[in-house]
Length: 174
Image (cartoon, rainbow, N blue to C red; front, side, top):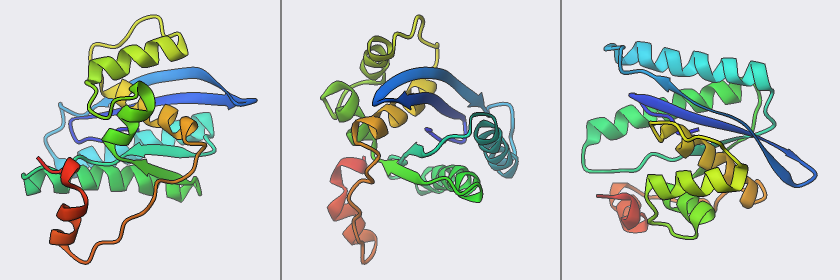
């Protein structure tokens, strides 16, 4: 999943005998909602619907990219938290991946563009046509990254404060 407050992208794969099979690629368009709390409710409800329909064993989620706009970071963090809470309410393990790690797993380049990631996913999974918006391929990329990482969580980092976070995550700060 790639949770956002404008568009939440998601993709589903099935893994059988260590082989990936493409299931679904879609997005939840939240642009029409002006109330931030209503957007969070929609993210939660759609995530629960996906879980109850497809019964995933695990969820891979893209970590928010941290920039200088604190309000944007807060909104993205809330969107991610709501999606995670939905998964956790159904006892589904969640693994978070930084955008660079996802891009590296899919394309071999941590600085790849959304278009490069989408094209590689198209080749890997035999997707006939790509969507206009690439938020859904970002969500699918998180799932494929999780598969390529054998479902092992990324190394966790400890932070003593904001300065510590910034020093350890220079690639995530604009």
